[in-house]
Length: 238
Image 1 (tube, one colour):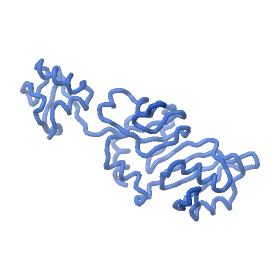
Image 2: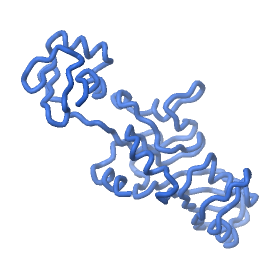
Image 3: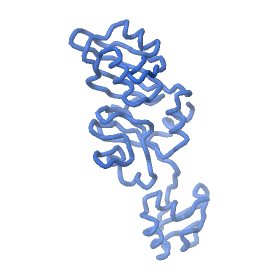
Image 4: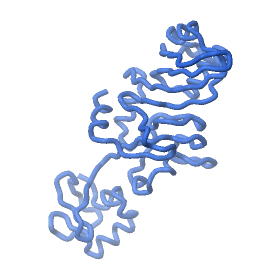
């Protein structure tokens, strides 16, 4: 059971104060009865709720996939930079969404945004071994020896030994390399620090998959869409 004012606010019908005004005007119905008390508790999954005669479609959680652009931080608020939450439609803001994990400011690609705390915990917990795959451009030649080093677990600058990672070479020569790297952790600047540990630099980084989800090629950088029911089910099966 949830308060009617919270339900309507979460669905984008205004602030609690604005919703209270709707109730006072008699514009809200619960199961055919005019509701006037903002503290009225309702089971939104069972009750028929109407605002100005239109039935609302209640949902507790939202699930978005974004193609994150460079220059934007993976946070809900930031004093200096634009955040990924600033990029999503305002209608979603009432749900208090947040990014699952983070992508560095200059990293682009797949980012999940939700208000489902349980799913967030499940996806970022290393013990669940959720693969995150990145396409990276490296400033130097990447060879089979580097592949083996990543497979054993790279020790980064602070002495932490990363979990084994899969490094696939797409192209490599003396001018640089293109690779795919699969990790199951999300340490701060991890991919960049892993390559720095073998004296190489990441010059471009894009996350192309997260668990069962792949980056939607139809999304331009900065765009997002809601996940399908099938995509949500795949995530929850992890």
